[in-house]
Image (cartoon, rainbow, N blue to C red):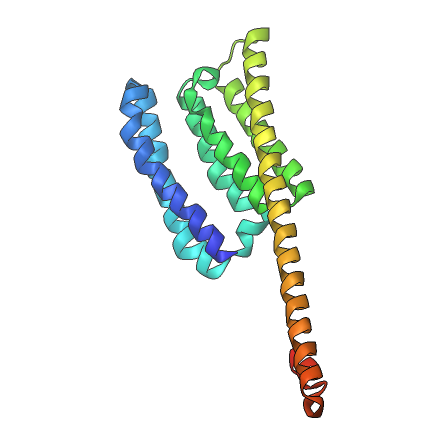
Length: 198
């Protein structure tokens, strides 16, 4: 668990300089300054997670509240300050979808995905999205693909877990077969290998 959270933290750290470097190409004026401010807060968030949460309270990340308050709150702020439904930075929500799919089981994936999607809708609404069918069609299209991404990541984890269980069962069967072969070869130590494996 801590290892995977450290890997997720590295992705966050990687995303900050990418956002800072690419933002002048995408944004101007207050939106640019706002994005840089969010990146500064994100860097502080990463420091807190790496120095306080991971070493002392890693269970906070498993249940979602810090994830919800940190990652999703920062992403919603970016959407609000960079144009709402017109913001191309909604793509960051696909990362959340993958993280949710990898981190949580199916039921929890649905719950946390609902929270993430609601935060995107709220950010679009706060940013002043015009209440047109086209606007909400765009939002629905994005949310649908984000949801598909989360459930696809969850499916991949399910398949990987099943493959890992099958590999472990195959390993155990191989050990049992080797142990049986040793026992049959040497009658004096019969059963010893089975006792050692148990």
